Structures are given as C-alpha cells and as structure tokens.
Image (cartoon, rainbow over all chains, first blue to last red; front, side, top):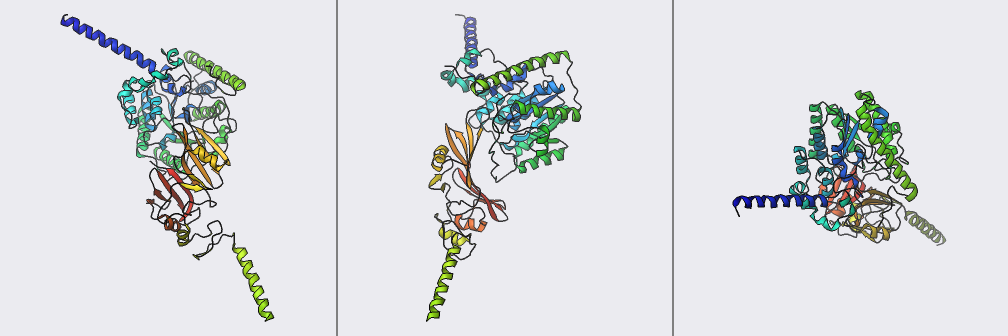
Length: 357
Length: 189
C-alpha cells in the first residue's frame, strides 16, 4: 500500500468516525419536545427575523409573563423574549451580547430577579441556557462564567461527552425530532392557559445578608454599558411574580442603582402598578402566583405596549408587509396553541393530552 | 385564738388566690426560681440556662416540636405526616423541571422544602412567634443575652442577627432592638 493510499484511507476513516460521532451526538442530545420544552428557547431565537424593536432578557419571569404576540397585535411593536429557565445574569449579558450581533433593538428589558444568584447553580439549567446558542465568543464566555465545578468546557463543545449515557433513555422524540424540532414558543414566549389562583403565598424568611454579589453588579454594569455603546435603552424590571419572594432590601438596591445610572426601573409588584395592569392573581396565574398565564401576560403586555409607545416613541409597525406576514404566522400558531390548551383543559383537566403507552 | 384562725384562713385564701393567679400568666420575673407552668415564663438568661434541656453553650440543630424532630435535609414528607395537617401548604414547582418546593405553615412555625434525589427534603424551618421555642428554650421576643446564655457565643453576629453554624446547617436568631424577631434553622453550604 502506498503512503498516499494509507493517508487517504486514514482520512476517510477519520471523517467517517467524525460523521458517525456527530450523528450519534445528534441522536443522544435531548430534544426538549415533551416534558421540558424550555430547553429549546435559546435556539428558537435564531429562527426569528431579527427585526425586533424590543428584546426581553431574563429568566422564566420574562418568558412566561410577557406576550410578544399581544405587543404586536395591539401596538405593532415587534419583540422577542431571550429568556431561559433560571437564566443567570451573566448568561443574560452574553445572550444579549449575542443578540446584538444580529440586530439592534430600541429597548431592552432585563428582569432583575437573577441578581440574587451570584454563583453557578445547576448544570441542567446551564445547558438549557447555553447549548442552544450559536458558537461565538459570547457563547464561550457564557459557558466559562456558568460552569459548575463538575462541568467541563469540552462537554459543551462535544455534547456527546455529556449525553452518551442517554442511549438507554432514548425516546420516540429523539428519533422523531432528529433532524429538527418544532417551534413551541411565540417569539420566545411560553404560553400557558391554565389557572391556579395564588393562595397562601409565603413571605420570605429573613436573610443574614441581602447584598447582591459583586459579580452580579459587574454584569449589570456590563449590560448597561453594552446598551449605551449600542444606543439601546436598558430598562430594569421586576416581573409581577409573587414567588420567589422579592425582598424590600433587594428592591432598594435596584432602585438606588437605577437612580445612580439614570435608568428606568419598573417593579410590577408595586400595588399601584399592579392595579394599573389589572392583573388578578386569582385568574391570571397558572401556578399560584409564580408566573402569569396567557391572560395575565396579555394584561402585562398591554401595559408595556402603552408605556413603550409613550416613553420611547416606538412606532406602530403594522402595515409593513413583511412584518405583517411574519407576525401573522406566529399569531396563528399562538391562537392554535391557546385553543389546544383550552380544549385539553376542558377534556382532561390539564393542558397536556394524556400520555399514550 | 379565733382571730388567729380567721387571720390564718384569710392569709391562706389570699395565698391560694395569688398562686392560682400566677399560673398561666406570663411573668417577666428576674427571680431565677420562678416556676415553670408548661411554657417558658421568663426570659432571664440564667433561668433559661438552668431550664434548657440542652447543655448551656451548645446548640441543637435539629428542632424538636411535639415529639417530632425536624432536621435540615431530613425527609419532609415523613415529618409532615408526623406533625399532622399544616394550616396551609404552598407549592412552588421548579422552573422547567419536575420537582416542587413546598412551604408548610403550622401554628408558630413554617417548614420549607426542596426536591432532591426524588425526596422532598427540609431546607429551612422558621419559628415565627413566641408560641414555640428552640430546644434550648429560646423563643421570639427573647433578648440576645438570653440567646447567648444558653447557646454560647455565636459563630457570627451583627446588630441584625446572631448565627450558629453547624455542619450543613445554621441556626439564626434575627434581631431588632436586641430582641429576637424570628428564628431560622436553615441549610448552609
């Protein structure tokens, strides 16, 4: 065998091995199409048209509490929620930095609950916030900032290193969605139509230390400066979620920061604001006050839309043919999903169909 | 003699009346020999140290109430079963995942839980009023001096709290004006 043939054979074997490994990796990676759909939130952004006047960044208090479809239909404001489950502030920063490579919105809302977390929390949540990002310096830095002690960077580059053991847990979803998942969100919004009234919501137990960690202030500063650099208006918000408890001591720190830096801070837990939104925690939450359902999200979005038009002179962009068509498709899916959930609630008492075995 | 009998009878009646009146009332006496009547009736540090079932200067991190021990990271379901139905229950599902945290509210205290390893584990216990007390006999309303008399020097102390750190658990006494406003047993890494 000539050297050339040996080299070519070796190369062919290597390429084959890489292709097989990539194929196996795709099969073994979770598809997030059944129980934990939130795993697909981050990747979903890259299916959008990057023409958003408003971006929301943060944890489930944004992706479950704001309805971009409502903002479009009522105000002609195109928006996207770059949210994920238990998104940490440094992840919010890098996701925002990533989004700003694709578009430059006029306003960014950041939900401040994540200021309470100043250390990496949980690998599963990390992966849901990071694996869906397209590779970029932002993703690299986000992973480095987020990894728990047990994690390693290589497993983010080659997820098969992490998910190889899933071979014994493969489900029909892993094969059905091998070549791609179906959209489960509506410009980053996770729709819930069920209702569970808020009752017996506990007040927070006292803490030894109410101070936010230095790293959180560092990333809040970075976010503020990034928005300044890009000419984007940054608005701090605390969503109207009753739990986890939002301490007065935490709120005071955010108020002080906003005042110091000339930022707007909207705390939707304030009685006056809650009254303005019309949110009723007897009917507008699906999990006893942790998150709003679609009825609450639409009320909050109505308030936000009016506020943004008044404060930031956002124009009504309905009438733009391309945008109209784009949002018509999202709204159609949104209405269909709402109808599906309502039907399931009536039939099964749950938004989900019963599992078939 | 008759006068002596009458005087004795009156004195006896007065004494009995005084004794019956004293029982069940909260007495902020500094008399270290004041009687116990089922609840701690005095915040005198020396008295508390004497009456505590725990050796003074030590801290018990597993709180006992009505014969049930509540330890951090213990199986909360078993504890709730032993304690009986709480006044209220609040459940907070974890974002995205299965697993729910609970807050059980009882008279005088709450139990917070977190899900781990398919178990509902105790994360924190908060004593919210003076109807309950720690194993050392400390309750809401006691002074910081009373706390340190029975628990010893705290691991950490500020004007707002005195904290005793055990392995994986902290016993925290939150203070306002030098008096305990709430008591928390909590998981501590």
